[in-house]
Length: 494
Ligand code: SF4
Image (cartoon, rainbow, N blue to C red):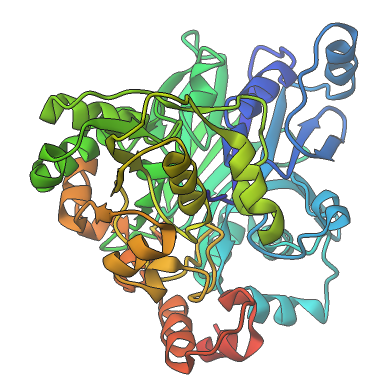
């Protein structure tokens, strides 16, 4: 199971109502995007901030009122985090929790971001001489670049970020004057949507549209790649600061990260996943014909399993169930904890698999721990054959843009071909959805998606150089590639 860097939310209430309700529910709806920490920042005669580690807590009654009273103001931003940079210790989780407040001279901004910076080492050393950082994560570097160049105006500060920073960044920010802004990197790698209330009194940004839905807001548009959007008392201003001839939206959002009821680039994620399942059925009909039943990994593979069932007519049984309140995401744990967590998370209804040949639909195989554990459980439950149908093509390269798979050696798809992966996880066969089928199902074109973890073709220059160098060195260095100084120097001065 994987973790992504973050989810963001921001809102401005022009009718003066308290923004906290919107922020709170905007985060609850997006908690799947980050389990390490959460935070709120509002603007009411100065900034008010509350951050903590863990999931967004369930608060109600008097406790809810206390939070609401403290986080006053009609404009605010909020954030859930899973760190793909910086230290993973628990004190740094709190230290790196966002939103951050960044200052420079008399300038101050509130800042929350989803993504990952590739040239972070170089930027950090360039800034270090003159500025301290508010935290150890990428967000602190990006926010510092912005706040130190904002005196020429917000737009010129954001322009500098887009020029100097290589990587994925979908940002929401807040200024002490109550201005709410958002911008997205020139390739639009991570999602960021704009919403509005029916009466026009509330404007909002959300990583996923589910953050708008839960608040009764209507999806209006996406923040475009390279665009800045500002909501102020005077209305909305939008400007496309950088326009490239391609975009690079993270293809993996469709298979795993986004909630099925979110809209990505005009399509509901569940409908894309159903199509993934239909594609698998069409491609691997021979395997379907020799199988007795379709199973699905809860919950990201359920829509694809439905599509597979619909296409082939093969029975789909929801024999694998999730223990609902085991909420740890296996990917963020230490390897030793990971397997036992997965074991506790997935339950198999016994007595229904004896002698059966099963197809298990899953969204991806990254390190193989989850898959191996589940296959072992299925064997114990009596399954005779286990075939794995995987919606995301084989992951062979690390990600530099906000998904925590940052070395070659951790990737089972880098170390083995299909047959080797099957052997390693104990399955009778692994069948990945072909890349062209995957892309077609999303409704996007190849040059609108990032597919680097599958193809090894990175949409940014330094990432490509670092991946090529790390691959060529074939070492077993387990540090994240973008945190290895000898590789990050490949970009020279940006
Ligand atoms: S490398 Fe893979 S996971 Fe990372 S942004 Fe690109 S498609 Fe998404």
